[in-house]
Length: 65
Image (cartoon, rainbow, N blue to C red):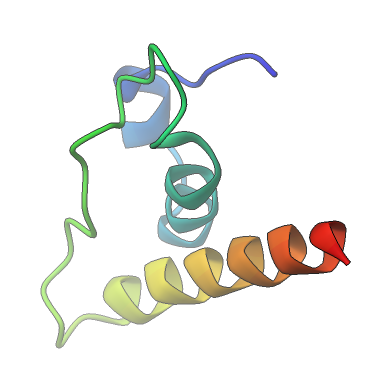
């Protein structure tokens, strides 16, 4: 898997950012290691980011079964 750079991540939609962060943040060499949801809770972008994280989590769980 090719790691996404911080610069690439900054240009993604909030939902994709959440997905990619969940998948790649713990991988060795990831520039996203210490990143979190950058959007205030009252913004739709915050909810979209969380939805991307949820989708990634479900995908990972399904792959483990």
